[in-house]
Image (cartoon, rainbow, N blue to C red):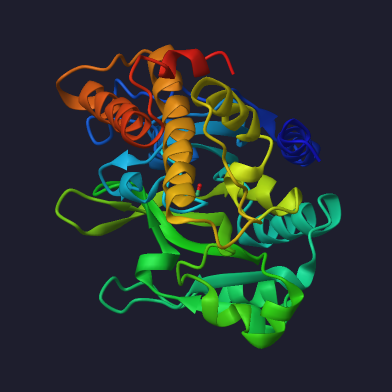
Length: 349
Ligand code: SER
């Protein structure tokens, strides 16, 4: 499936489950002092979770432009070096505002991945929150019991607060979560080493694709948790990673989300990119590949941020955008021999 069709299939699936499709919010946030950028799909819905505002529908779905380069969620230094992190990425999401909860959300996630997209079940692992005494939040028995209907127990991972308790920032709505991970290694690799041991271990081919958060708490400024007035669902699926899984490649950058940008950089610079299928590349080629990934990742972040109202500048959110742009220019200058401005030529693509 083309990336466009994958995105459409997701939105249509949740529309068929009674969700209203809404547009992505701008990537830049102007009215939330706790965040500079949308770092997740749920940020624009924060006030609904807190009970301060009422949504148009209590079931919503969308694909949100996210930027994770500041604050609690910051992936900037990894970007380019690995094959599955980005500054800007799209997060497919479905939300329940005080409506359905775990027993609908988890089976729907499974149905979408295994029946609609037909991903192989034996490549999927799921995780549930093991509980945390200090926070006074118990083991998520409900999620565990729901998953047991679909997944053998030896594919269910118990995760700690770092991996299985999702928080928007230092303050705000939060709750235990259940992630779905996919193992994209070859059959031989999977036979030799179980994917179970590689979940949450920074393996580039065993990656989280979807997070289902069960919003029940608000983290207050003093660090304490207070119960929210109602229970909600917040899910986020990494669109570029899902495309990697669906398109039979082992790098987000080898999907059709990125290959047109790679072709354009190759055309401008004369340097060639090698896909992740080609191992044993020279040190020089590896540097070229990293630089091309940096440039094509960063141009998306900068272009969308500017289009959504945040110009590069020397303070605050504008400085974050300037730093991303500067990093792209520097990698181009140093490794792709671009001595003239060229990033702007990628914006159309
Ligand atoms: N808020 C969760 C996340 O960003 C799920 O959408 O991972």
